Length: 604
Image (tube, rainbow, N blue to C red):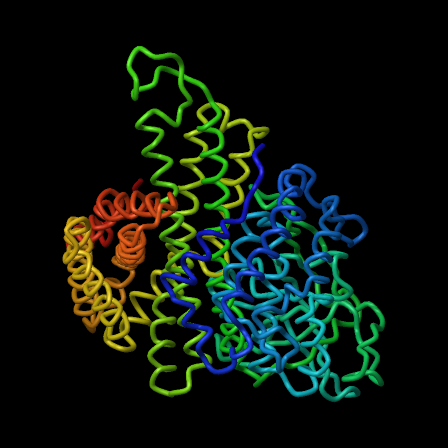
């Protein structure tokens, strides 16, 4: 088992050189500085490396246990979470007006990646709380904000998202949990029903858990328009103290009926919650009745970007694990000096191929996710309406790519990590297998990656005629031209330009066929996943092209930092070895959907 080290140097490169600390120049961040950001990264790395990471393997081995409706977490998890809360980490990206530290989202995302890389199972707890904060900040009443937000922001209370039911997975129109108004208690509802797959739905790490629950009132219509959002606390607050000190009252009528036995993230309790086994779980309407799904998407969009960041964190740990093993494992003769003695496997070109593929992809994914976070900062804080709207349009396009492409790639990167280890990678004690098991959930939850692809190729592209993505492709082509102007980087520019042309052509095709009144929805479904994969490869290659320009400039200016040489090697691999694989998705799209339309699963 090899130790984890948060990649602070690479975060600094992305924030300082690729993004040029653009978020710090936005209104609202006047008190932040590059020195402060660097100090935050260093301190977060200490928490990740020294407190969270050592519990990753033991938490996986021990897992969670349910006893009399209460979840017992792995040893050390409660203390590690409380160290996180005491350090003020839960509120670093939350506005000061809501009790947070008011740092840019791009900085908060960097910290989140460190923590997920250190311990994904533990990192899921604050990730869901962040979504609850967003939902209440946008849709909660003044009373709800006053009582719940301060404690959620500090992390002494945690939040959950309760969507899925046994009969209602991705199709939330089938939600059947009931919310009955209390005639004797105006403003209160009593909820009855069951929710499954609730991440951190029960635990003792925090004083209270705030469940955000989708349910139907008695006279609600069928379908999505009949769904409302309710806040259901684990412990009720005394009515006389609402908005005051928030002292806890009696236990609400919501219990953990079971916890799932899962492939991975064993240290994260995935719960079945039962609401209303007795008189009904007390809940409060959040926002407008009948608009629960709209309100919940505020929470889900927040979570989807974070799931992408989570996948990148696991990919980073898989990289570090594979590199450490390859540099330590002695096997075979060195191709560098034929006839010499035994060498470490890092000398073998096929192993180098795997290592460089893991590193280049992880760096590219990180750069794209942080670029998206920086655009979130612009969308929320820029002075001009037009600038905010343009950034938000980019965010809308980028989030499904960051979520889906990053998590798909994380699974592949973790799998390559096992391959580097050989037979030892398949043995649990080596630690590489856990990373693959943990990473595998990320393409599934917060909307499967197929749903992300449909969101991109369907709703997002059709809504603006592809304008936001076309604007991004313009920027990709500008980077390709800058690369082409450099003698040392011209071949990278050619590769990136070809990828941009493929993405532009595929975009036009998807728009044209998606607009067909008869076959449009089928075309979008058929092409969505390869289209998202093509977009992910091209946009990640774009970030590595920008990386190559910065690294080349640093070396030309006289830097002898080997970091820049390594960056050039990663960029070369990403643009000339990895991007061509992704470009094949254009051919997949152009091949049409005839075989899919004719396919009959019952025959096979």
